[in-house]
Amino acid sequence: MKSIIKYLRILPLIMMLASCSSSDDSGVDEEKPSITINYDGGFPQACEVLERGNTYTFKARATDNLALAAYSLNIHHNFDHHTHDDQGAQCELEPTKDAVNPMIYIENFDVEEGATSYEINVSIDIPEDIDPGDYHCSYSVTDVTGWQSRTSVDIKIL
Image 1 (tube, rainbow, N blue to C red):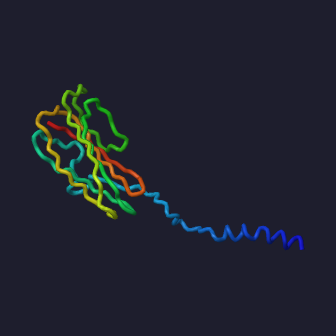
Image 2 (image 1 turned 60 degrees about the vertical axis):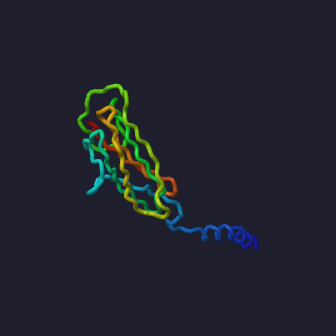
Image 3 (image 1 turned 135 degrees about the vertical axis):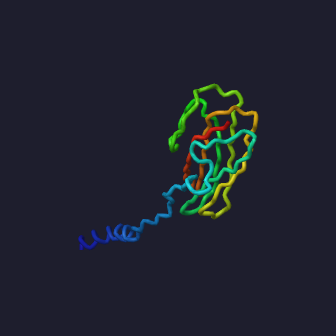
């Protein structure tokens, strides 16, 4: 009788363990979104030269397994020759210098709800009175669960 009672005590534990799912589908998103400019139409490419006083359309492609939420575009000077951990090819840089009137563009945008792919398409006027030189163009994308990816390239503004 003692052995039956002993087994009855562990029966709830056995049932609880058996009811747990062994599936890999835990409902947790473990995949970051992706973002790239490396496709026909992506802009700017590494080492691209932009001219002050012109308007350019900045394009990147973002995708996610569930849904995208937002993206940002950041253009800032690289007069101090800093780098970004996600940066691809590095271009020939001018000598370091102090910024006097650099271009700084930082904007955040929402992606329509439920989109799993999106082409970023932002027109930007490059002011004529900014400091020419080395700049970085950085894109960032965030999915609905908070994962983020980014890509950056060196550009020149003359």
